Amino acid sequence: MIGYVIGDSDMITGFRLVGVEGAEVATVDEAWQALSEVLNRSDIAIIVISEAFSMDPAIHAQIDKIRQEQITPLIVELPGSRGPSSTTTISDTISKILGIRI
Image (cartoon, rainbow, N blue to C red):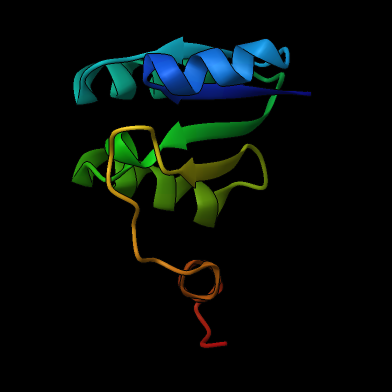
C-alpha cells in the first residue's frame, strides 16, 4: 500500500522528493479527474489532496462519501502553497464521519 498526492506543483515536488507519487493539477477539473483515477487503484492507502482543490463542493462531497463508506484509502486534506487553510478541526471531521459529537 502506498500514498498518492494531488496538488499544485510546489506540493507535488515536496512529496516526490521523499518518494511519494502524485498528480500535479492546476484546476478543479484536473483534481477531480486525478481523484477519480486514483480511487480505482487498489494499491493506494493514503491520498493527500490540497485544500485548494478539496474545498470544491463536488470533490468535498466525494471525499466525505469515501470517508463514511470505506476504510481505505485514508484521505488527508493539506493546505497548499497558494490556497487558504480550512477551519475544520479534526474533531469536527471525526464527528461528521461517526455521526456523534466529541
